[in-house]
Length: 320
Length: 258
Image (cartoon, rainbow over all chains, first blue to last red):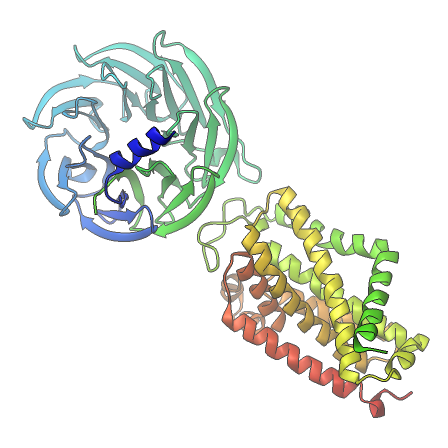
């Protein structure tokens, strides 16, 4: 116990002021939120219609999908300066960074391809034909399998990252928008926005393990549109953003049951967990804000105003 | 007879009335619970209300009206308490009480205190049931709520005293109650945020803002979140003092003859 505490203290080093970075789709900016004080720290301009956002594993770079600029932008998070653009193909909406911290897999919504980019040489390594309107991007923890979901084809495409070939396709419900591997890599979760379900697959067999649907008293069923998903730090729960239902669903991973619904802002898209793993942050598109949820009590703590139509979210620890 | 004994006697009498009239207690609880379970559920605001202080995030309608329903309990309780004064007057108990060798303000104050206590017990029971239903606050919030609700109860109780001084018969009092309770409750922030009222009618919103009951509800609402609404506190204390002064004036011997 003491050893763990000591280790944690040593690893934590100086007081960490964690940050949550949020892309504002309509404002062409990223907002930076102080994850402790729950206040807006600063806002930086980006390319047009920023959506997907992620940090490099060392938190030195922020990658931003500037959809309408047809580029993935690389930002220095310490200065907010755009360092350079990466080739991305047209209309990049979502991407995922490989565990190798170098390869970026980008969904090109208009061209029905997944573009593989080397962030160091800044070159396109491969382009893989997938279904119509690819969007959801997940990668297995060992980096061996990348999954692209295509919104119109209603499929999850399993791509072998060594050969850049599709090795399998899994049919899911209408308009799959997000794919997420469990931290141990054993399961793949895919959310279907119009179908209103989340499908869980076994990574090994690629067989469907289960399907989750949602129900909130007083909310019309067609408003229950699952999009973003996030595993809890201990991987026992999955948080599912339910879009215009203005709620998150908390799913028990063990039996795939819905434990709870949490009220957040309007049209909730995606989430990020604070680096100290105490809070979950949601982007609420229509209400233009971010709701912070305490992970211990699963209660919303505060809602912070950001720019117009916040979409993607990413977290970084910072030494201050 | 010491002051404490006189106060104790009045409190005991109110307590006895409260205990013996068990249905009154249940009726007082059922009313706000029906609002909470039926009205709030039917309102379909499951998608959340806009954020305004003291709230820091989106809330359901049930959460919003909980403090308003606490106010409703206190309002009904205060009116019930003053109704019993009219009853006392008719039955002659009041003459007995007022001839006790204690100043009028003390006797009326004791009566006021007794009524407020009964109201507070009802509020506590209501919040306990609401917590079981899922509308919870922090312990600090519940702690801060007590003095806030007590002040609101005293203010509303004092208003009840003013009315009871003016009304001679029980029959008339029922009418007065309808004229006081319903406008006070509906034209306040208890059921709807005032900004919502503002959208439909600036005049109604203005009435809501000057309604002392609104401030009683807001004082309780902020307290439940560990915050102090200074304006509400000032209005509740000011209105409470004014009503009590009016009640003393109304109960002057020259005016209560007959």
